[in-house]
Image (cartoon, rainbow, N blue to C red; front, side, top):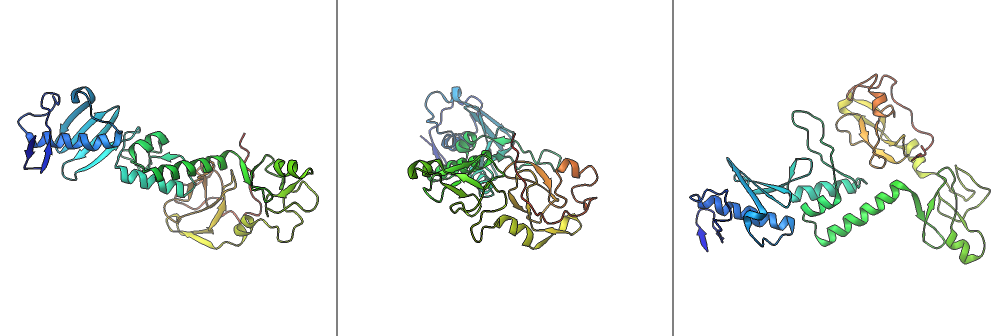
Amino acid sequence: MILCHKCSLVKALTFIDIKTVNHTNHHNTCLYNSIQEQALLLTGGTGGGSLYEQWELHMVGNLYTVKHTGIKFELKQDTNTLRAEMSCGHAVTPQSLTAWCRSLLDKGQYKFMCPALKDGTIEQCGTEWSYQEVRKLALLTDSEQRHFEETMAALAAAEFCEYKSCPGCQSFVEREDLTNLNVRCTVCTAEMGRTYEFCWQCLRQWKGPGPRSDRCDNDGCTNKELDLLQKCSMTILPEVQNVQCPSTRACPTCGVLIEHDKSGCKNIICWRCQKEFCFVCLKLTPECLQTSTHFKPCSDGVAPRQTSMPTWKRN
């Protein structure tokens, strides 16, 4: 054992295996071992076997890098912060990776996209990170991992199918016809020995003739999302020449409700269908930008409040 007084670390130094280390600089060697220990935490490795066989170590100025099992780690001597290189080439700390991915889940987005800017541009990288990669490098606790996986599963199910809990038996029912509010529960139908139908909108037993796309005959059966679209307040987009528009919009592709955070340009990406559209004119971004720009008012003006919910045609 060797005590490095400069870095106050007690390390077992293996000078033969770490062949890229300057053997006369024993502080750098300790630093390499420190990187190795932190990186082992990220990869879940044990460090067994020859270090030279498992690790590639490099030093350029005050930037130390180490590669292990295909993952590259960086440690800047001045900040002593270890960052892992993601598959897109951008480096991130485990803490910031966890925080970013959790914020995406909170927004209803289960696909993890890199937010870093491409070199020399203002364009986001946008590369999708797999959950396996995020789970490995974000140092998720058991509870965080359960939260991530349960939330991702629910969001993915909501993207690919329409399902709600039956008011009769509480089992999940998928709505195949997105234009019909009259939905049959096969579980309740089998248990009762007669047809059981409920309203997809008010979640009560169906009343009145069907099929219908607007409402059933139960009192108070209204589309609360449509009411919000018609009654929401107006908002101002400061960076789009202070243009005013309704504060809530239904995505023109899938119909999910979205609010603008008032920062940046007028174009946003829907968390559900991943389509980008203009929050002002409600056109898809490529069509909007044919006669306008991201930060200028639309040539067709502000789209009025929506009076019907768009139906998502997935195919």
